[in-house]
Length: 569
Image (cartoon, rainbow, N blue to C red; front, side, top):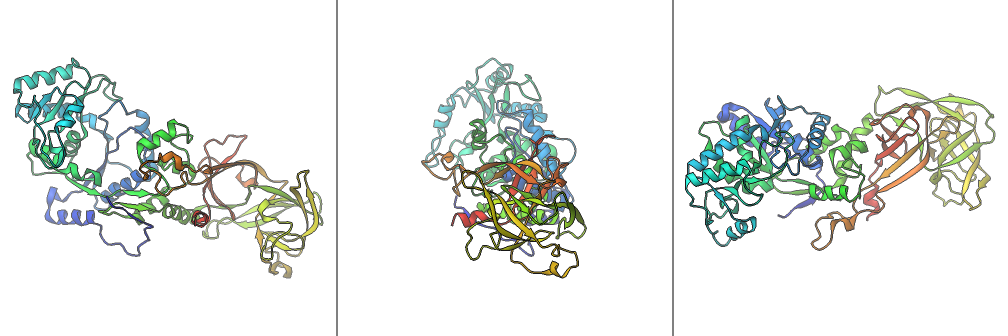
């Protein structure tokens, strides 16, 4: 399928999307009593990612907009790949995004007995049969879209024989892969999924909810529509790859239900994100082969990874809203997601000062032993955020990049003979006195300060203009931290889109840089995992769960500006 590749621009006034148009038309017609009941149906075989987040926002958002309900239902029909770890994580992610499902959590396994009873009904009605062919033989018998399939040699078994074999499948008398139950539809159907689809297969694996009660498990296509029906779902919203499944969804409902109420499957196109992969199989490979530290690695597109990196629920909901709903698959630029988190954190994150690669500044004319407190605003975008007191002393730390011994003409930071202002404090001027280590690296820069230039002091000199303002941390008051600078995990815009190249070949070897000995203002000493800040002039950061009482670990969420696009031009 052709994909649009673009940044989705925000719209000032949004019209109804095509799903909302369908829903409003059906409400006006009184279909299903005018009710709206959606569901989010994840398979508990991995962690949710940003694509799932947009689907969550869509399903729960539609229910909220039309005063309806939204269920959470786990599609737990393949116990060999599922785990309670994933069900717990998915529930946590949904709640963190700001949504709450209606009623109890639902599971496809809640309906195993009803599904089994329906399967027996279809056997009795001559609409299902047990097939002894191998998976390869079944696949070959379906042929291709240009030629009709071939009937299974077991297709015309009697009802009695099929029922006996199905009971023996349930009793565990056959090996995995030796028998399946298939629906008897049409082996010449142009839709390949209608060529006698498999309804049940044998899996000898303990289920995380039903234990060893079952050794036959229903397929997704036999489970999905019937589960929707049993839960009273009115709008079963799926991604576009399920469009071809819709005739089968409706066929099973036609065979097994007879009431006026009827769920409707509606498909929308996936919203893919560039510079990443969102296939669960590929994400699992990254985890298992240690390319990342886990499902919640801040470079992963998983919801738990974004949460650990410092993204906010509001920013992800904003992203989903701006991307919208489409019938055609689109690739959204990562820059839009980063824009959304910047927009939210700019309004909510307190500003603090941190020096990630420090060199020392000594103010030679500042009194030794003196410490004074200066006032700095917490967030100029938030009038209620107030101010804080920050310690200032004779010895300070500034960023190594903010000093240059032999600077070009337009370098407006610290260099011998040049003045800069220290944020919220004094104007300082660099002297020629510079200390270096044996390798020639600058370790200490000596300066003098203008005692009359303190910000907000009322002195005339306080309003003196200089071209550069630097952030800083007082040496006597600084705390240390490890700072992890995360960047995009892949260098290629579409790492999985190259036919003969493994997607892992495009991993960005500079996606993580760890800095130790970073100097932070002491107001951060009581911060806890999940706390978010703007490090002035550096970007937005978040306290990592690896932090302990004696070690503060900080993750970079996103830079202040989109430097990636500039770097890759």
